[in-house]
Length: 152
Image (cartoon, rainbow, N blue to C red; front, side, top):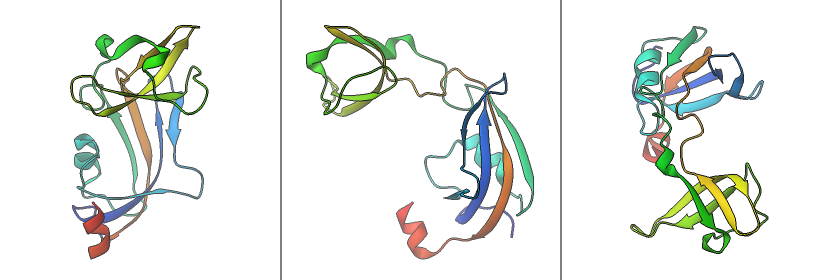
């Protein structure tokens, strides 16, 4: 079966940057399964994987424009600790949430720096501004069940 919308696709993959540093990968023996064509996937991946079959390898270059956009300096803020809602310690690399003052929605940030009074947070996607290499192999392609389609 070829990859098409409403198929469950299972892939073993790794994502690296232009220097070859692996940024993310599916654990060995635990491939990623997803419903092809469902919201949330990058459009370029849908286009590039469509029509492939089990056993086929892929190697896709994703520019920031095709992926997660350029880094936006306006999404990096220095805020008072008191404005954060966090149950545990606030440390660089960790995540915190804060209620957006204009929309009221909870926003998740990555902490990049901490001092006694303030926390520097970044709401950019972790892959923003990075050209990515998405490579791997298609393990399986099958029709999605009604239940799987209802979840996506």
